[in-house]
Length: 206
Image 1 (tube, rainbow, N blue to C red):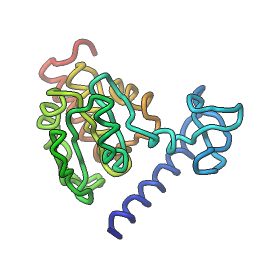
Image 2 (image 1 turned 120 degrees about the vertical axis):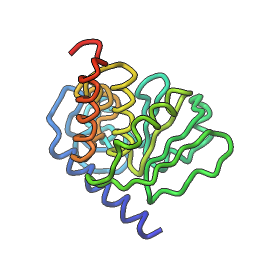
Image 3 (image 1 turned 30 degrees about the vertical axis):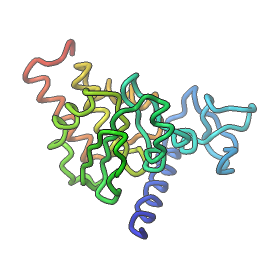
Image 4 (image 1 turned 90 degrees about the vertical axis):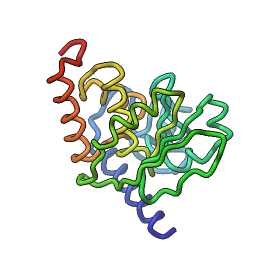
């Protein structure tokens, strides 16, 4: 349990660093988060007053993030709220994380991948398998914080399903869930997938 908490704290620190380095855009302003009380970047979609809303972390982790009509992305805590998942029509749960316990529910089809959020982890080896799993039904994809590992799997799915580049798939995912940030190793593996797709002429357009 201590390892689990340590990993979660490390992911929170990563989010804070990402937020501090984020390029300013029209969807983000500076203000007070009414949930965690921090004075930081807050998301306009969550604004309840001109200077009060939810920070990006609290906004994204308030519930599963809908990426497309058949894919949701979340952190570990929201993945355990089975009642909400049922209300959203989710039928499958895909978990990526060696530190995350397997889901024991029989209400959903599940898939569990034992991988650390490390640049050296071989996520590429699971791209084909996870793509086939997700395309079967409405799926929640999650890791510990919903930032790196789960985002990598979703981006790969979007690339293959829509026959688009890494940059295009990343932008789709980032627009829906601003805190995503695959680690450098995962980005390299996604670009390896992109190169393979180019070689076989898989893209609709380049």
